[in-house]
Image 1: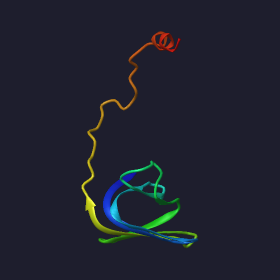
Image 2: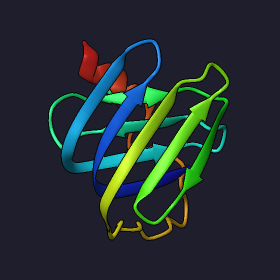
Image 3: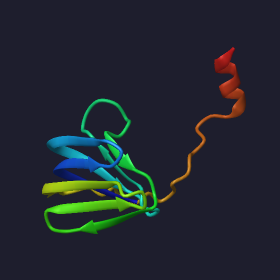
Image 4: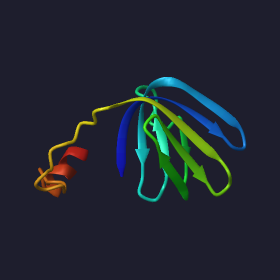
Amino acid sequence: MRLVIARCSVDYEGRLSAHLPMATRLLLIKADGCISIHSDGGAYKPLNWMVAPNTLHEEADRWLVRNTKGETLTISIERILPTPTPEPAANRGFRRTASRRDCRSCCR
C-alpha cells in the first residue's frame, strides 16, 4: 500500500463525469490496483475511487489511472507533500492488559 499526500485536482471520465477542485488530498494506492482519493476533513469515505484492475501511469505533474471499462481518473498534481512514516513497532499485536475475569466484572 502506498500513501501520498498531495495538493491536486481530480477528474473522472466514465459513465459520468466528476471534478474535484485543487485541494490537499490523501491518495491511497493499493498493490492490487485500487486507488482512492480522500479529503482532509469530513467522513472516512473516499471522495472518488477506482477498483482494480487499473493501470497507473505517473508523470511529474499528472497521474492517469485507466481501467478495462474505459474509465479514466486524471490526478493533476501541483505538489506532493512529505508523508510521515511511523516508527516500526517491535510487536504489532495487541497486548492484554486485563484478565477475562476483570472484563466480566466490569460488564455486570
